[in-house]
Image (tube, rainbow, N blue to C red; front, side, top):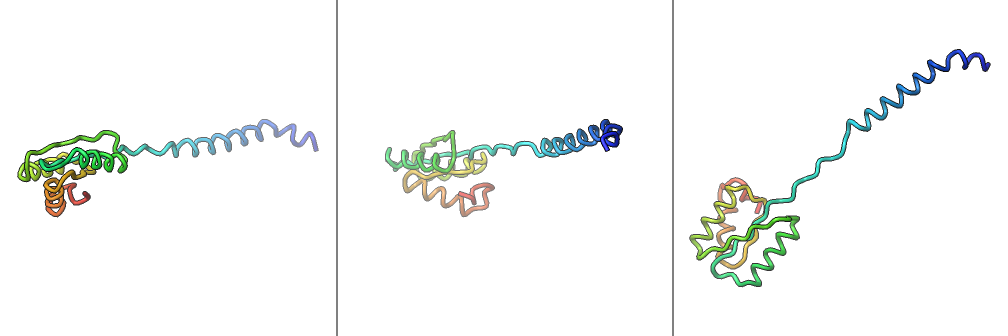
Length: 120
């Protein structure tokens, strides 16, 4: 019985090595999952926004997973509307409003057909 395995030891070792290599290759081919990038976030602050509202909006953007947050201050409603459209065109994922003017501008942009703004 021992001579049976002794004659076939190299073949059995090669078979075992092949099975292990195939299993390791399959495991490596899956690879790690790609990391998702944090969302691009901005805070749009109208001319009527208080510092507390800006801080709260920045905290909300941070809580949404953003690591870098752009803060855009505007002088009034027309400028807030223009900035909201610009943020949509630039592909921001999250835009938080600070103040009534910014809320109105973001609501208007979100209800429009601007690409990306519908997700706000």
